[in-house]
Image (cartoon, rainbow, N blue to C red):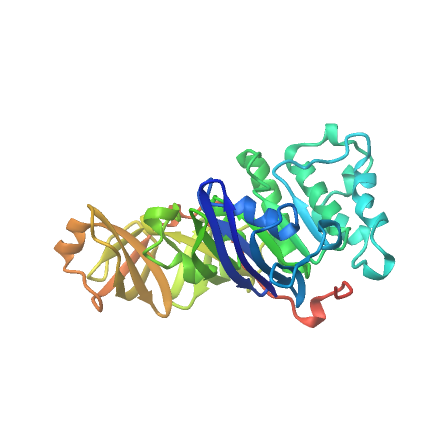
Length: 376
């Protein structure tokens, strides 16, 4: 459990942030200058706040009323920056062991071999950082932080300096880190694809304040955040792999509102949980059962909410068998179709609307039997 209540002046901006997270990946999302990095710097102890109460699993890190300020080196927090910041004169193995050596044996959890396997860096152990790609450096930096046995990981836009190929390389490892290691993560980003793929909780920051906070699916389904937070409207759903169609290169997913066909998900077994981001701009609406369409995905539902209507475009939230689906339409289309709350509709979703940014492994909180490390 992470509890944050901070008030601090940053030049002309007043940072005022309160949120609670019960673990997993908590994404701090917002535009540049929203106060995200300053907030994580306060959490890790790099900035002494004007007023704050911050606790981690019941241990108080900062409480200005009680004059408590735990020094940064005693907080057991791992910090991963945009660049790996590895020691250039040490090998990958030596970089990994740096935190391990300085952590008392009684506070260590996991082991070197486990972290190396988790991050897929076994073939890099003898190399020096200068011979690594950007994605490899970040994986090593994450491994070094993990081997210091932190109670919390802070990631400040760890993929921002990487190109798309390197991001695709490292995202699956971040998903494994989220699902297999019992270390909560606070993840700073302004990338919607990263947040929707990784986050279990989203905290939206605007001009130093919290505009919204909650489970990813709930925050992404809100219609009032898009205009000022750059949070592209769309639904984040958890689905299950039902079947693979080898002949057409498709995978069928089962969710509460029906089935979806998406491009083939390689190496995913039947029954595997996946996270799906359906962007509002990829959803069309029909008031009649569609016929003769090329789109393979049609979900039946009703209009649950219409968003703000102060321009030519507006967003709608649909209830499709208990699943919240968002659609972006012109105001003219809404009026022509006579859409209002309670109107029965069909959501038409193009299969080609799904790509590497909208499909990812779903969060699964490990059961006790899944845990192979010693609890912190």
